[in-house]
Image (tube, rainbow, N blue to C red):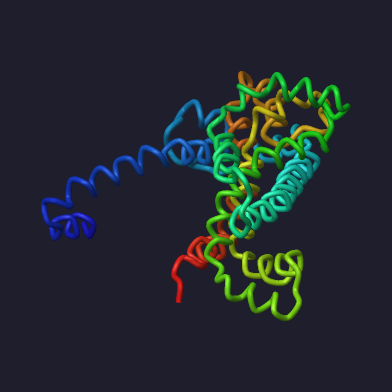
Length: 282
């Protein structure tokens, strides 16, 4: 077999790491492949051949899941939370990155570290005060309240990404702009924002994916079915039909993650370009 021939050509020091990487890759990819295969099977085939490929693929489970989930409404909610939350996080993080990178703020290192420590806080540690705060502000069980929560939790990561990027912008560009009479806000608007667009695209996309996958905040802070995102909305399908239909939960999961897969396929090139943009100074 071709892959065996390639393995024979490798030195002994690379055979073991390559084998381990291949084994861990198969172990990681097996559950999503099994979920995908189950979604295309009938219930009878799942019982007869739970780990094999579908002999006669069917879309019945996807049709049932679409109807039971109200997929269009759940998709709209998830897209709204992901897009608006990521946009607000960018609006908060970019000016802060500009200030931390280019201005001498008293205690800025301590403040920067304190903001980044929120990246290590589990969601469970803040859910009670967050629940109380949103209830006091009248934002509990509202789309806007959940958007603000996602923006606040996404801001530290975007701040980390954008601070490193803004710090790499040559100061000579700003000095030349100041000679021409440009203010600090003008430098931010006409220099920092355009040059930081690759980092903005990367941060926005990664934060969009994180919000789309988020489950805990929506489960606790929302109670109205009309406001539920897709990851919480599929609970109705899995809880109601789990013991009567084996392929329906798998189809619901595939439908819930399909937008993220498409986003990664189409945005992968721009994400990679943005991650390395500015890494090498000329």
